[in-house]
Length: 119
Image 1 (tube, rainbow, N blue to C red):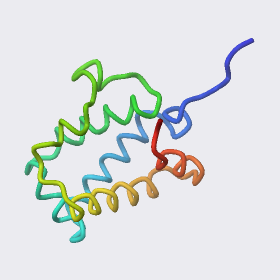
Image 2: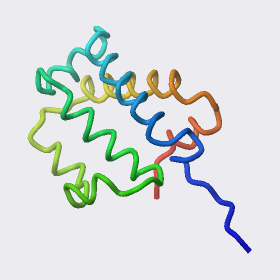
Image 3: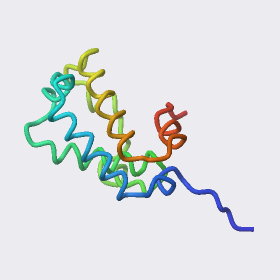
């Protein structure tokens, strides 16, 4: 019997949707005044950050482990340790990601699943 289970990656539309999500996320970060503190901890050219987040999310949501193949285990805490991330930066990031997710993933239940912490 075949396994008909699909991943979140597949359910939301794969790489195309994730690229749209991360593109919109960084557009929002670049333009929303509420995200200025978060924007300030990023390089002026965020294309590298956008690509890394895209690669990370592809694997995180069940697609190919592109990020891990290129960079190893994400170690998110240690990779962000040198950035001054406080409540304002965190809240700006969350605002941008939530809005980008709402705009690019049409299915509400899938957005809820993505938003929930992974075990």
